[in-house]
Image (cartoon, rainbow over all chains, first blue to last red; front, top):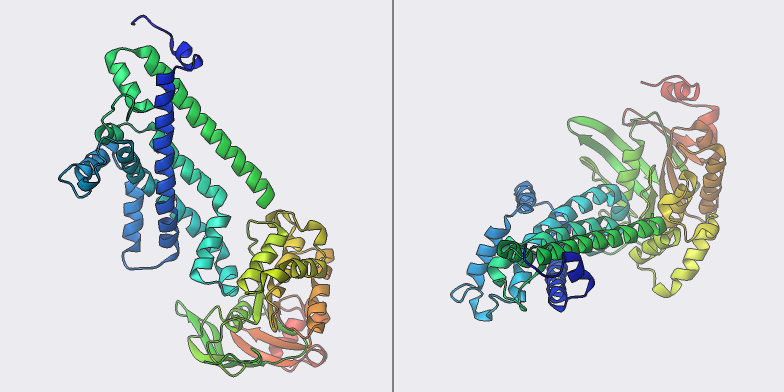
Length: 230
Length: 240
């Protein structure tokens, strides 16, 4: 093992390089979850409440997309963003934006599939009441999403977990450029391969701590909300 | 189509409902007019809940037609229903009422006053901020009544509103039903509790196996039932 500070020393000393990586990781993953929520929640709710030919097939496909291999998504986004690709004109390849796009593609199906299931279950319970109130389609969707809000937090957490832990897609479209597109997971992969285990372990500790902290916060919010709203 | 001034009378014109090859209602004719409560009685599976859903407009007949104030396909602007197991929205008691007021397009400026009035009417003003799903069964049923009344209905349908409630909770719900009826809201209620029917009904409609077997004023129904099914039901015999 090379000489240098231990993993814990790196974390506790507030090493600027380490915290720049942490900041970028959170920026990319949280942005991707936010974008995926904007796509996935309305999409999931729409599938839950609409009957159309091939709906069962769409649900199976959506559930299957939850297991999308990150490297395949990375490759597809790479091809789309490369100079000759469909979105090449935007010049996003090897930028944090490209990483956000890739993670959004990974996370949106998870949020959409879990939202679909949650809203469909709630609709079975609320259907008679909301129909009797003569509520229009938009009113129904808004009511269901609002009342499912605590359950949907779980969908967002699942999405965040996927994004925060993911390395295959963002290393392809981000390039793991130091100080620009290096995140915790890509840095851990790189530093481990270089033999700099203290930094890799330090980042690993921070990553796990963040995931636990985010889940604890969301769980607390959910508990408090359920206590107040039932 | 011009909206009728009232959604009453509601007329069932030879209405039949079938589902999966089973006849649930068979050639039913009935007029629900303004006046004292109409109580639908009959054993389980006789078609009481289906009648209420049809009258509310939640279900379409397989054959025959239903009219509200003489018109077909009238949206339920002045109709409201309380289901046997009402679903409470995951919000406070008062937020459940505000939701119903918004759904009925009641101006926002009136919400606070209306919520206070409705909670007072059903005796839940002290529980306004309690999560609706954490209320007891009887309290939830009273909140469901208030939520239905938020629509300011001309006719209120109640599907077994006191089933599974204890006597105290039952009395509280029945008192509200009487108050509602005194405010000239037509109450149409399904029950298989004969005692409740005696206490509340102005008119009785008895169903058996999807058919109306007797329709009469409550007093004459209980004093001198005209059909064998009604006599057997009143005598506590099992109608199969």
